[in-house]
Length: 173
Image (cartoon, rainbow, N blue to C red; front, side, top):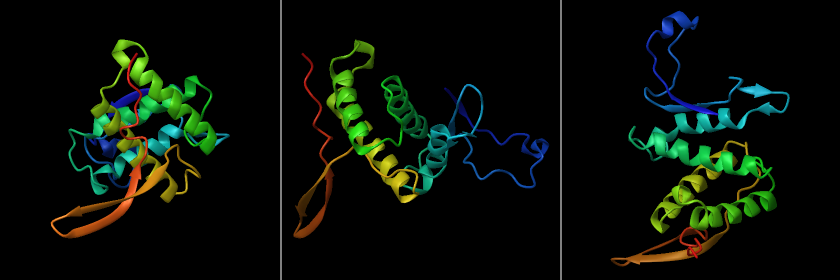
């Protein structure tokens, strides 16, 4: 799998009637064979690219953040692939992969370990990706469990869901 940055330079020579609606500088993923779909349908990299192109409209307007978001989902996909779990697997498969990923990021090779803040940031990105994928009907399930929470600030009360996996990273041994 390869990650590249989109540039519209020369789009007129691509045989298209209009410039693609892809944000300039957007990081995109490509499988080694450069196919976007196969006999199983649309490939995970294609779905990730569609999500990435909507990042500016979905709370991530900074081009400086886009590569990190795409890399986060790419690394999750690569980890799951090594364990026979697909990006849109069953909830049981996704949760098992998430448990293994948590241990890997806490106790695996030093260069792959995460600090708690990095873990939380990555879980927030993955949760956003899976919410988007469910809304777009690519995914039937997600690896996260949510609990209800209540926040109060200056007399205002807000209720919402909290991802139970943020802050749930095991301590390194």
